[in-house]
Length: 262
Image (cartoon, rainbow, N blue to C red; front, side, top):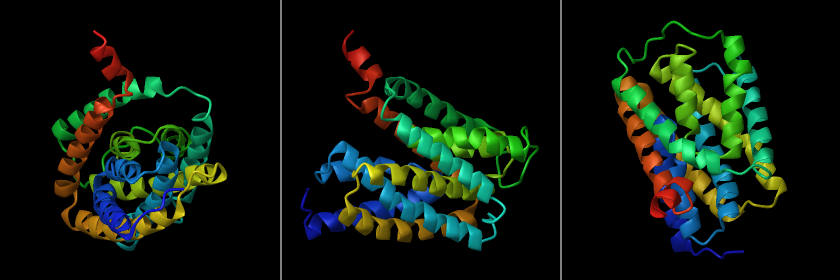
């Protein structure tokens, strides 16, 4: 087990604080926290498991903040959260048997497409629009699908939930952001228990980072409630592009390996 110094723990705390701030508005906090954990000396599986622990504090904190602001009704949305959690458990279990190469190939393309959608789609604001899917069907199909993806792979989960809430459920951007955090929290819980059972969680940095995540998410969600779409939309676009670039820059990404082999 890696013995982390006070200096490293302090760096991880502030990394999680920044990640919690960004994640509570646009998702993508794992862009900061997973590399930070790996640089601190944790193995990839420890980094993923510990990241799930610390992200529980951020997504939970943001969910509470949005609920207090009246942007999400926790009781009425509980079935949706349960479906997200169930999907993430299935995804985390599938991650042990399915190859992830096809996801690494498709993910950057999908994230860039989401960035283009939110950057150029007209009329995206905090007002609800006509839903293309009933709440029951959305809860039964789209929610567990993205929850499963979160357990299986993870990066970009918040962006996919946002896309679904806006384009299928007809939510305004602020309402979509609030509900995304609830479903992120639920999917984090589901996959957390799978990582816990596998012994892949490093508790000391996870709890220290959890404190940073909680504080950052409180600050970010309050800013989002005040600023609405004019804060959420550009940050979401930037986050999607940064995540796509990071995935393509990974030496293990099949696309990068194919290009380098030409």
